[in-house]
Length: 390
Image (cartoon, rainbow, N blue to C red; front, side, top):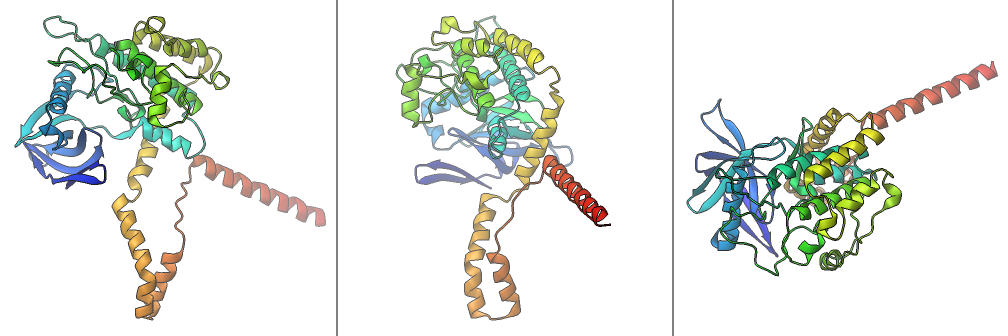
């Protein structure tokens, strides 16, 4: 088991097979602060499967990042809501910090979006609106969170983006990664002048490194909804720093032509420049989205989202890993030289196979139906022609 994190042209690599009471099986994801592994705890045959989020070893030595990671774990323990992913356990094994969460099977919204982009499509409008309404439900719970003593937690996610939204194979929506959330759970606060978050999903005040509240998350949700429906965020595709400056100056452009007339005022309110002009809370935004959804997509069936997520994640998981693809390329590049040294029928066959292009097209139900329809049409045409000759 290897754990890798890019640091410029280098990587931090460490072997992990056991972490505290958890047996680590495989890496399933990585981000700027942590790597996520599929792991298990308990006796064989009665194991509890979990997702183990492990802080990068180099960041564990930095007080600020360690504080953020520990604060996320403490915050997530309070988030008992169907849309949020609770932390079941936290620990420190010989200086390696981890948190155990529910193991989710499916794909991120980023992967789902990429799936449709590969077909020059956008996420179906009904699904996009339904997903965002679910996310807003989770945000409203987090924004309204209080501690056991009744103290308002003042949670702001601050990193709402497609990679932090998960669609399970059952069609459930999950909001993840409160790693840079601002909350009084933390002993300190983000230093002034430090911009944290994901461009282009920042609110203008966040891009200017000003203090933010829950309405910054509402702006980010508006950007997400715009991107899912139109295929792009309401900002020019420039370099990250240029995009940040554009957001800070509120230089955004809503693509009204591709947004339904009834949805435009909802999106425009969420993307207002001044926080006071946006939705006061995520629940109001979710309610308006659901109202418009029932009006413009009356037959939308959210159960289809799970089937779609399951098919897409199955195709993704069945593809060869990056290491396997590199090995395949290496074998192809070596094959001709092997044939020169060993002029046998076997090596010649290997060379011919190696030189053939790989066919990776994915046939879905619509393509199959189109092919069958084409064959039926050709058969009917042939029948008409033969009948005419007779």
